[in-house]
Image (cartoon, rainbow, N blue to C red; front, top):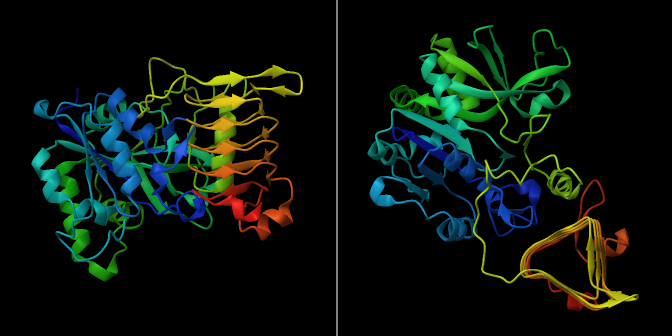
Length: 410
């Protein structure tokens, strides 16, 4: 166990491109895969890697996230110095919201000091992947690094969304540029660029020094690790190393996803219902933890040829009742009900959705607590969906907001 390491999860993102799923919740709190929240993957990586001191820094629309962590992540023993603790913005060192990733850490230095960590690992709470952070920490210490940055190759045409770096044969970083318009290619692989994953391991003393220097620059800095801290450290000749992403997903290709848009969220979710899903959620050696309510097992009711409760190539969570309806290639979160003669295809239904008799849903994301009236259709008529105020994505996915009252359209 790494008792001298503190993990800090940045979980304050607005996630505006995921609206309406983020209308009432922060991006890390968005449900995923039926049972989980997005942040569960980062927190599970911490627990599986034996990191038991975790701070979660929240900011926008944090109520849902706070409740989820309180319900599902309070199993560590505080008396033994183990915890997952939510830290809201305190404005202790400034009277502003967090102005960047570095500023978020800077405004919590007093809380970090109480943990007295030798090294600090900084993580994002809005990515889906499996990674053993302990290996990265060992790599960081073996190289006597001031900072280590996790990285992975990405197609060059996509690299402008990331920080892009160059490293020598020993892994030492010589160049780092944040979201460049023309990403530099990897040596020997002109179609790829080496992208930062936004995962950093700092020597804590060095981190303090850099944060205070950056804060002193005030308006001259954007107070961001990628844009300010790392370039400044490179200019000073400090020891910064690149750590190649080592996947714990146990598949042929490395799996790391940023579900930053509705279409990316939909496609990543739909991957889970394939015969051999790219993301392996069934690996008992690297479990994904979450909070699960004590619902009963899913139930399928009626067997008449024209009224058969059945689901095909789908994920169906506890508490669901498919009562004479049909479900194809879909994800049903806990406590969803699909009533007689209803049809659900290629869709994601979040908790407590109730699909009325003869209703039809296709290529849609329906957020929590929506009651779909009898005979109602979602995803079958684009113009009608737009007229009703639903969100339609570039790929044609219809999104219904949490608690939307559909009876007024029936």
